[in-house]
Length: 90
Image (cartoon, rainbow, N blue to C red; front, side):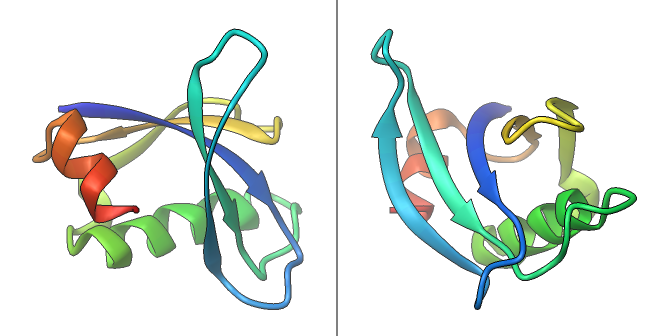
């Protein structure tokens, strides 16, 4: 099981990964854009669906642990370790 921190940008022109960055403490996060608006959890749902498709996993293997209303989200991914997760999203 792996955990992933994502900085989500809703209402983008296209669903895409913008790469890895690090916060002030040096912790890595993945920048992701989705076309869905941040209304009633639509952007969060779009994020889970996009990541599941990119990782070739069912959506049920991904869950939002933290950041429901924040731009920074913590996602738990079942079935991949940290190295495989990072490789699949690079």
